[in-house]
Image (cartoon, one colour):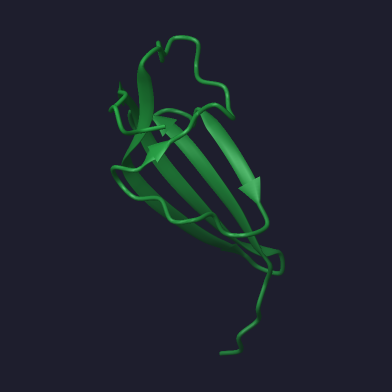
Length: 95
């Protein structure tokens, strides 16, 4: 079997509360995203929080992480970092 290296395309999808619905926001990149772990906090000031989410005094916390990999022959390899988050009360030592 011959190994052919293909370019990699990266995507991070942020899901609110579960992976069932469409992502709240999607980011695309040409380089891998840094590691994301359950319990991490994500600053949401750089992207739109859904209007139904009351964020006063709350922060976004990671509650699940899922990686999806695929290959499209003669095109590219894809890596999607799916991150499920929840709004939680802001701890005094965060942000």
